[in-house]
Image 1 (cartoon, rainbow, N blue to C red):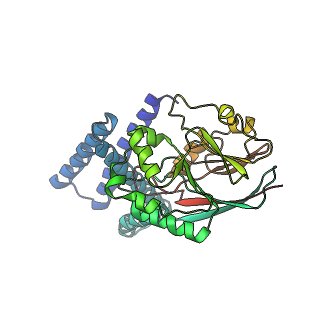
Image 2: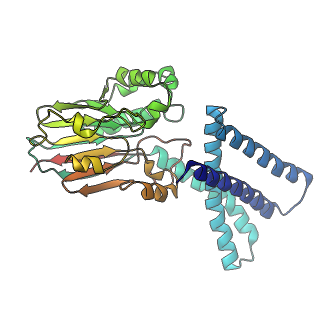
Image 3: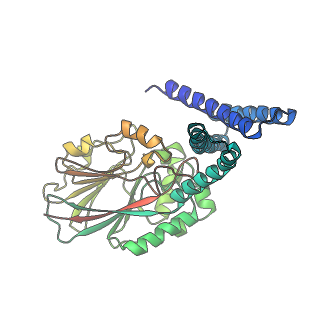
Length: 356
C-alpha cells in the first residue's frame, strides 16, 4: 500500500473521530450555547494543528502528542459507539443512564488498555529442534523495549523481576531497545537497570528500526554500556552448543544475507538461533535456521491494528513452524506513541528448547 494512501486514511480517520467526539458531546449535553460552539471550534483547531505538526514532522514532541491524542480519540469512539448502539437497539427510555455511562465506559477502557501496557505476561513455549543439544536451553525473549520517557527505569525493573523469576540460560533482545534517541536513556541512567539483567550464557541483542531512526552510534553505545552483547550481522558459537545470530534491521541498506553471516559455521551439527527484528520468515527457512525470534509488530498494539499487521506479515504474532524452522514473534515489552495496549499486552516469551 503506498504511503500517500496510508497517510490519507489516517487523516480521514482522525477528522471523523474528531467529528464523532463533537457529535457525542452535543448528544450528551443537548444544548447549543456559544461556549459549546467555542469548545467545538477549539477541538478542531487544536486537533488539526497537531495533525499539521505531525505530518510535517515539525516537532518530535508534537508528533508524539498527536499519536497520543489519536489513540485517546479512538478509544473514546470504541467505548461510546457500543453504548450508543445499545441505547438505540434497546429503545431505552432512559437516555440519561446511557449518557452517564459514556465517560464511565471511556475511563474503564483507558484503565484496561493501561493495564495491558504495564502488566507483563509470560508466554511459555516448548520447542524441539532437529539437532542435538547437550541439555535443554531456556531462553527469555524481550523485544521492543522502546526506552524513552514513556518506557523507563520502572519498566526495566519489571523486566529484571521477570528475569529473576524465570531464571533463563540466555536472554535475547531482538531490536528496538532504544526509542530513536538515547538522550533520555542517558539522562535517567537506564544502563544501570539494564545491567541487572543476567543469564549464565549472556544477554544478547540485535538492532531494530528505531535504533536507526536516531543517532545510531549513540544508540549502539547505550546498548553496549548496559553490558549487552550486540550482534550486528554477526554469529557466535555459545558454550559449544549452538550458534547465535544477530541480524541488522532492514533499515540498513548494507544488511548482509543470512547465508553470508553463517559461512564457516558448522550449521549442520549445531542448532542455529537467529534474532531478526522484523518477522520475515523465508530467508531463515531457506537457510534451515532452527529458531528465529522477532518483534516489531507489537501485535498491532491497538485494536484493530493487530488485524492490519497480520495482513502484512506471515507471522505477526505468536509461533509458527515452517519445514524444520521454528519462528516466534512477540508483541514486545514496551510500546510506541502512547502508553496503552488494546488487543495486545506487555510480555516476554520463554522458550524451552530441547534437542532430538
